[in-house]
Length: 463
Image (cartoon, rainbow, N blue to C red; front, side):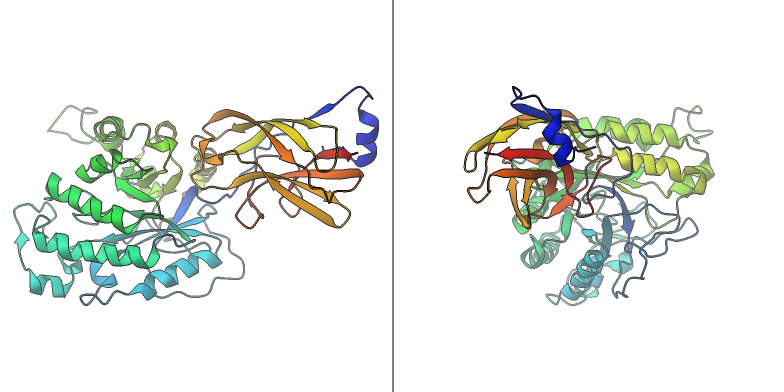
């Protein structure tokens, strides 16, 4: 517990010149932004499907006001929504893009306290390809389809031109939007996920379009694709996502011996992160996993959730997207523990600073941050102290780059200027991670926290 002023005045000997702050660690779940579980095709407080279904094709196109109490039933609390729409929905006529749909989704997410991840899909089934594009270029590749319907020729110059213009238009309109968390670089194939018949050369051209379109909003590549391999070589932080997280299929009876079949968890992910060159991408950009089917399906199939979670932690993921279906009651505690660990989780391990300082002078702070999560944060928030004296207060941020705080200890020292307006006497010292408006934005894993989300530290005597 932080010392009261009277306790502080009596606690230190006259010869002491420094003090240390070591707040008590809290193991509580912290519903922080930019990490954790996302809602899918809906928003915080919306009811999940109470069966094992979901819908890849139909992102929300109308947006009802939130309920009074935003509490998810059979689903974790979240600070992110993930929505994706078919190209046909977002551009029903050439050049006439439904910006209003994405604007509505961004606003709906914001009022629920969420940011929004987005994907625009070339198609889901052939019926999702824009009619105007098929009229313009009806070339289909039936032999390449493993899904029972024809697919479009992704290598056609007209596909690069028109889908590329679609992406450029969205980037021009939405790049850098404050509530846009990330944009999937989905370029070809059903749902834009696997590249299908797209050549390596065409994939690289489409990735260059995404990079031109989104210079501020983070891009997310798709694991196991030529596009992701290209993005991994670029000189900018780009994250990656993988579909079918949790897939532990062993049932290949009559084809291979039991337990020797291919699946995502045991073969695809461990090898493709190396093949794609994204082993260390998590250090500068987020990793997202989307479930294979749903968590309820894992339970139905008898898959080992402890092994699934343990492997997910190996990849330093920040975002977990379990589609639109409920989380089984018996596994909710495990999923919540998973949410605690993924992404970042900061606490101040140790902070050393002066007992006394003159107004207008600099005070040196030595800080050790313990990131008990498995990844850094990727947004430029700032650690800051707040000095309070009577009704006046001063917020003084550190220059340390919070995005470099990898898991485990992170130490730095800085000298902070004490404002000349601070009068002789005592100031109360608080600490927080703040946004551009100098408001606390990220909860730290400390047991003692003020109602305004600042953390009480100690006092400094102003001489």
